[in-house]
Image (tube, rainbow, N blue to C red; front, side):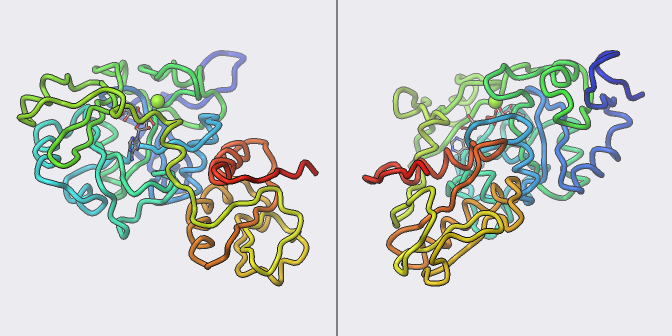
Length: 333
Ligand code: TXA
Ligand code: MG
C-alpha cells in the first residue's frame, strides 16, 4: 500500500502499479502531475492539452527555462492526430513503438497539444511508452507531457524512491513500477529530407535505428539541438521591451497582474498573462499571447514586470530571449 519516503520527510505517496491507475487518473484529470514509470526512466507526467498542468511540470522540476517536452501517446491514431508522419518516420515508429524511441515531427495545429509543451516550436517530440504509462494514456484518452522525473540539473530517476527523494513534496504521487528496464532516456531522432538525425542517443542503439532506416544516422554539430539552443527559436517579428511601466499607442501590451502600465488604454492590443498574478496561469498563456500580440501589427510588445520567483524565472528567461536580438535598455526600476 501507500508509504512515504522516510519517517521525518514529507514526501509524495508511492503506490504500486496495481493500485495506482485510479488515483493517477484522478490527479491528472484534475490538472495535477504524477510521476510514472516508463521503460526508460521515470517521467513526470501531466495532461499535454492542459497548460496549467504543463506549467506545474516545469514548476516541480524547478527548470529555470521552458525546454520542449516529449508528448507520450497510447497508439498510432493518437500520434497521427498530433503530428504529421513522413514515411521514414512512420517506418521507425512501427519498428520501435511502443519502446524507447522519440521522434521529432511537424506538429498539427489542431492536434490539441498546449504550446507550452513545445515551448512554441512547430515540431513535437512524440513517443509511445510501454507498460503503465501507455495504459494510463489509453484510459485518459489524451497525450501526456512528461520530462524525466528529476529536478533540473540532476540525473534521471530509474526507481520510485529516487523520484520521491529528489522531487519530495513538490509532487503528490509516484507510481512504483520497480526499476525501469532500459535505464537511460529514449533515443531522439528527427527525419529531415530523407536523412535521419540523431538528436540524443538513448535506449534504441543507433545501429538498430540505421538497420530500419536503411541510411546512416547523421550526427555532429548540427545534430546537437541542446535545450539552450532551442530556446532561441522563437523571436517575434515585433521588438520586445521588458519591465514596461508605461506603454505608447504604437505598442502592444503583455500585462501581468491586477495593475496596468501607464497609458495602457492607448495600446494597440493588451493581453493579460494572469489578472490575478498567478505565475502558473501566466506560464500557460505565455507562448500563445506572444504570438497573438505579434500578429496585432504593433511595432513593439511592451511587457509589464514579472516577478522572478517560481515559474517567473522561466517566464523571464523566455522574454529576455525574445528581447535579446535587439538593442534595448532594460529599465532597472
Ligand atoms: O525516455 C525519455 O525520453 C524520458 C521518458 C520520461 O519518456 N523523457 C525525457 O524527457 O527524457 P526530457 O524532457 O528530460 O528530455 C526531452 C528531450 C530534451 O532534450 C528536449 O530538448 C528534446 O527532448 N525535445 C523535445 N521536443 C523537441 C523538439 N521539438 N525538437 C527537438 N528536441 C526536442
Ligand atoms: Mg531529462
